[in-house]
Length: 602
Image (cartoon, rainbow, N blue to C red; front, top):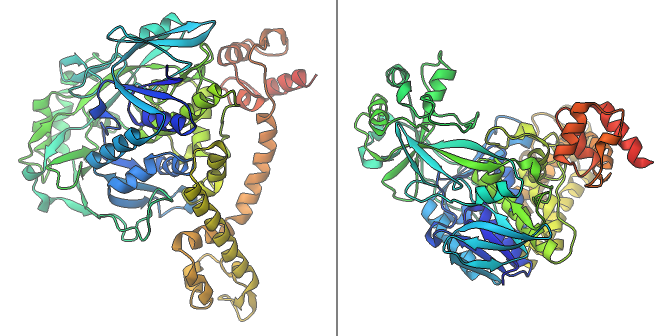
């Protein structure tokens, strides 16, 4: 008997399985195909705006995504550098074959973890708790916890023009049975939609008519475990633009799009629309930017980022050939839309255990999210908490003030998800404290305490803490001539000037050259942001008092006469775990929170 069963081997599934196994619990990962473990079914990239912060946090907690991205990366770039450092975000183009192979090897070599090819189609409970799962071949497996990470596979339907067929991904069969089982146990299920663009043959593209976009010359890895100096390949991507001819073809053929013909019932992602959706929503735009991204080193298969579509293959080709550089383009695989079932995430606790069935956890796109990074983060938390539940330990939950992962899970468990959820830096109200360069400083200690972070990673963390502290002491104790006058002042004060940087102080303070660029950057940023962060911490302390104010799970809100009927309905349905969580539910007013807090104090 496995203590924990993980259903699905995508980005959420592998993080969940490895995390639980590292904590000493027997885990069985069940996937339809071992070869598809950690497959990158959409874009060949890891990270991006806010997503890069999540990857750094996964690494700080002992997860695998960041290290895999570093091993497989073929171009690294820090995004948003024209804005404040709090919203800089790392992103990497990766060789999707190396990425998947690396993670498969890590899964295979993880103690306490076994892999079985099969499909979980149902589960059984005893006294309201998970007791076993059923596989498609009729096999029954006992377990104490089940983590569902089935991605887009649950009753998945692929749409290409007027063609529709069941699939979880292109050329892969869908998963059936779990949705019906969840409904039988009282869960609310909905439908979402996402899509992917066509893959083009590289040799059919006229590269001379495209614009080149390179990665950074001094790339920063995701993982603190990646060896330095870090010198990955810097393979260029390319940019092309749609035009009026392309838009006209698509506009005149909307009835052939699965999205506009009414065949798709699921709601798609607002922030990653299909190309036909773009030209309808932005009719005055005469062009849209597209990225040509290699899917692996030396690949003759190019991912056309920005051209997600559910148009028929022939129309995809005709419209693409109007684009400069793509006049002779050949499609290896057409773009498509995919519909799938998801479980409304307000039915989850912050531990990602469901409120209706004890020992049942959900992570990834089944919770209504989009993106590899959001899925992996949920998988890590679900895996940790499934293991800790088996060990009779309290669950790990991250606050909004601690991590983007905390923001993600708090949003999922308090807000109605009616479209695929995507993380943005604007979603984090404490983003000054949640910078990507501070992820290890915020979370490594926690990851070490719960048993996920290795001694080696913890030693790296402690040395970095000491290094940053030493830099700050040097800048505090060393007086230099001010750039704004002839007076002498501490070097840390000089850094507060808008055009001053720590690199400009190295000639004046040679000792600074003994430190790594990463440690210098973090120390400098802490000093420049010190006033803002201090104010942010005061707000965090005030709000965290509400987070510690626990609400009993069986609390009867209807007995509070001063609450509105809308508030009672929302609180009774979502069942928030704390006053803080209750305060973030749409429809719950500050006055309602005050009434609830006063009653509970009594």
